[in-house]
Length: 217
Ligand code: GAR
Image (cartoon, rainbow, N blue to C red; front, side, top):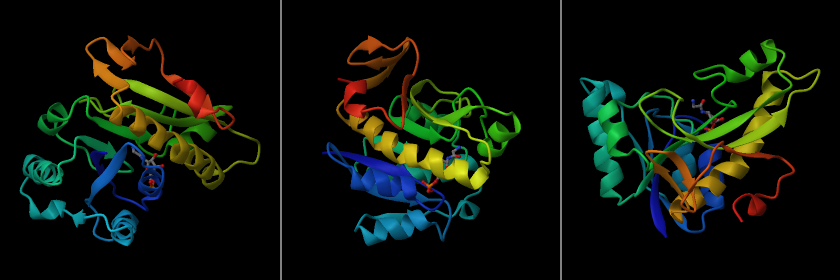
């Protein structure tokens, strides 16, 4: 099983989904920049090494990143999976892990990079919203997108209802994509994202009704 490192700042519901669905990968360590992160407690409950790395203990971003890199390697992880990690990683770290690091972002990129995505989608009157799983590059929320899960936006929705709908899809698709990475079926090339060695012209697109087994059959 391919060891992966999960970096998380928040509740850790995506971490939990990754742990629960693990087949060809295993979560070798969880690292957080927030002391009380739910993700750390979830990892400990599952017997996964969990480390809080205090950003305030480091003089700059590069030295913080170096410590994260050291921990990842100490646990033998081959991929870095950002699951609600809310700290920007420096370009040296990003280059080291390019093609081996993915993120889940709560919007249909390139729409709504950054924060507050659900409120912005509602304010724009969008009918469709969702989540994107993408390779991490230097450009914030700008790396090549592997897969997008769409959800409808409905009259009467608020940020909480939309967040719940989007997260339900994140929990389904993120482990699916990490599985494809671990199997080396999804890779990053200079031409873009490859699935089984063939470039995908656009992100794979699914909704709640899609049978994921069909997506990369
Ligand atoms: C997820 O919904 C993820 O999309 C978002 O943080 C949440 C973490 O939830 N990530 C970002 O906004 C990254 N830009 P979780 O801690 O319950 O997995």
